[in-house]
Length: 196
Image (spheres, one colour):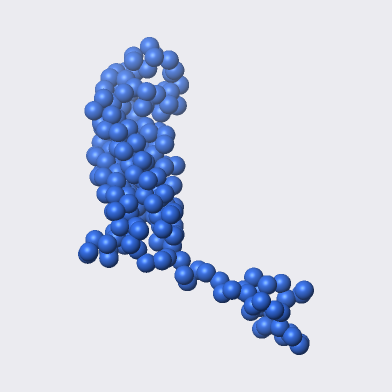
């Protein structure tokens, strides 16, 4: 019962934390390329190593911000979307950690050295060393996955959200008599055109 009561705050916090970790980590160094030609190490940011990292992290942040005011159906949709995003980013990050492929650093190495092509890159790249940021991102994806499970389990029981953003129903008949500026603003707030 406690999970149901706190489900909304846990889910929104999990979405926002996962998205924030993703955005922050996309700007940090994920991979360090040690060069075979004794040049300076090449630092590869997360956004270059995993091109989907920044856009999907932004989408997760948007889902987290909207989750607190959505209705029941959209909550479940958001939970499913986040539940699909977390494993996708997690798998991509895990592969990067385990294999450190040259394809993940290709664009940054080419931009830095001016060399392109598999043979030229293999002559430049001596080793690819992951930093701590992919591991931190993995923690963010685990948090996001847990938050999406909480949404799917408890989202139906949340109180209706968004009431403070709903407008009052417009009156069925326009007001008779003279209309002053305050009445005009009130009618505009209810979605009625006072000039008609």
